[in-house]
Length: 151
Image (cartoon, rainbow, N blue to C red; front, side, top):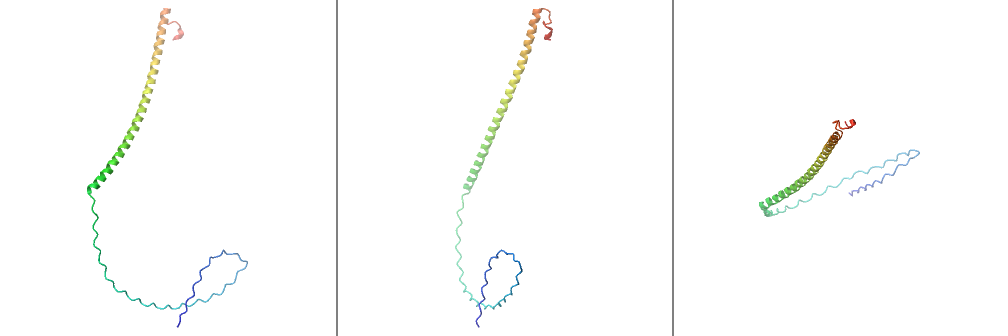
């Protein structure tokens, strides 16, 4: 007895935007669903004949081992490079610190020279006033230094 082929399912159309309708439409009548048809049972496939197991491949030779001395040399080279970079950074830091100490020292020396100059100027002024007062005493001979306003 021939088996009817099922109808292909129609692809769903994209939903159009709903338009407002003034009145509700009556529900359409449901279409009768087709009855599922029994599918024929597939014929059992014959089992494939066992194929002979492939021969195992001969083991590949291990790659030649690297000389441990080369690894040590590479590690030493890396270490030396790292130490040189650290030394360069340290040298740069030392130079910066030295420059800063030099600026600070020059500033301090400049301030000390200015302070010494002020002290010397004050001392010279005092000595000059003392000398002028001594001359006036000699000229007047009274020992008061002349003008009473000079006190």
